[in-house]
Length: 312
Ligand code: SF4
Ligand code: SF4
Ligand code: SF4
Ligand code: FES
Image (cartoon, rainbow, N blue to C red; front, side):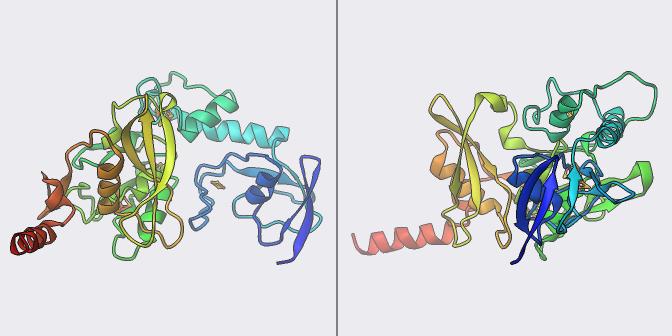
């Protein structure tokens, strides 16, 4: 792949010509804020937070969807860029609940990180907030629409797997929401609790319920492991505290890696000191389950018992 030479914030860099501006900036250690971009997902250009100034270009360009061109001169933190970024962040905060003190996502929330970086604060106002609609029907996922910033990452990742395709946008304008199937709960929809959507959500709109109240993220250590359940070897994070493994979290799926509930439960069983009880969906209802049933090992266990009995 041929390379191109560009200049970002006064620094020269040579990058492959199929790179977008976010990827090129990363090489220089420049982090362009991005709420809807994920290198593993189709580019949506929805949040506009990654706007940058490109010399000889009249309009600001979205760094996630603009490919580099030889000779490009880019400014990622110019006065104009920062002013617009602050306006976008303020609009998001104005319709967002001021819940950072108790939100499970605090410490790893991108909205919180960027608001801090650009000095944008929650403010009192009488305007509309996003409606509080909480779906707590799943023992694996908590969905809180009031915190959703409509980046669409959950929709894109869920739709990457043909047989899932659970999430979609519903309604228009201010009433836009992310829904499961035809606006069902996660429990009654065909959601398979893979937690791909939770892994990509940049804010506290989708939370892993099995992690809730375990501890604040900054008190935990994390290490990445590969699932041993099948050849895909999806990545999970094992969270620990005082040398005790307390939670397993789905990591960003990469292309061709689906993530699944079975793999996550097997990982919990293998690594956690005290795993929570598993649940499985039966006829559109979650029921507490034995590990044998949750992992679909019933028949194998029967066979093992029979073989052992026959050979005793
Ligand atoms: S989602 Fe982020 S910004 Fe919103 S309350 Fe939680 S931590 Fe704060
Ligand atoms: S858990 Fe998996 S199947 Fe369910 S909505 Fe999220 S991505 Fe889709
Ligand atoms: S639920 Fe999360 S990932 Fe999905 S659109 Fe809302 S903010 Fe984005
Ligand atoms: S990250 Fe580029 S538009 Fe959202």
